[in-house]
Length: 259
Image 1 (cartoon, one colour):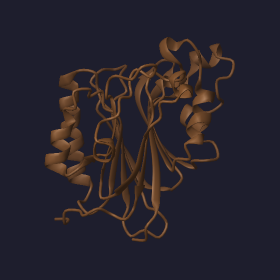
Image 2: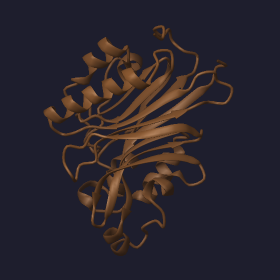
Image 3: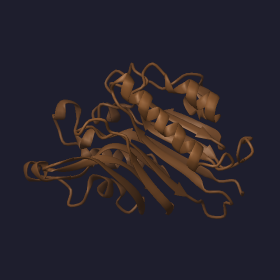
Image 4: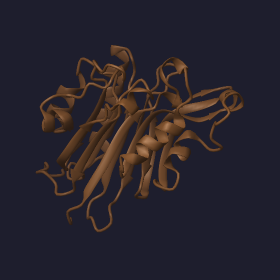
């Protein structure tokens, strides 16, 4: 595989509203995300459709929120419609500059209004020999939820991601006690990129004074080049989460042999 870089961002956009739904900030979110120059964007809490807000908000986009953010930058996207209600639906999305060879959503919501999913997409960079697996994650608020959802995620990786193919998992884990770590590292050989590169996990919630380590980026089979905690003033006025950024080289770190 020829060496390339891959820049990714993960961001829970709080359905395009600021904290406590005080302001509709999707246009500002779009501009801020575009400035990151990411190749892949993992989004959580994205409206696919909402007829009530569309009537109330004057600058509501004509398309879904993920298509609005993608615009002319990320031509390829996958969307997971998990929470469905009378006025619309929301879920998670992956935006990509590279086409998906395939993608699938695994809805792991235990409650009707909660959008919890594992959105698994596969891309292939130009000139590369191996596909890259992307999994966008949004896990539950309760420990019993997350345990079941993490078990599903681990089974998914073991059954659908060959050991020799690069993998990135990113999203809102709601796992402030870092319970996922032992399973990922011990069972799957997956590394948390901020812990590996900067020596500690990124604090991402609440945005105005990040304390909890809610959002995470994990990888396997890729070299970590850079990590950034995007906590500047502009981000603190948007969602209740802070986005995380990571840059990888496709010059792989040693992988376990596929079986």
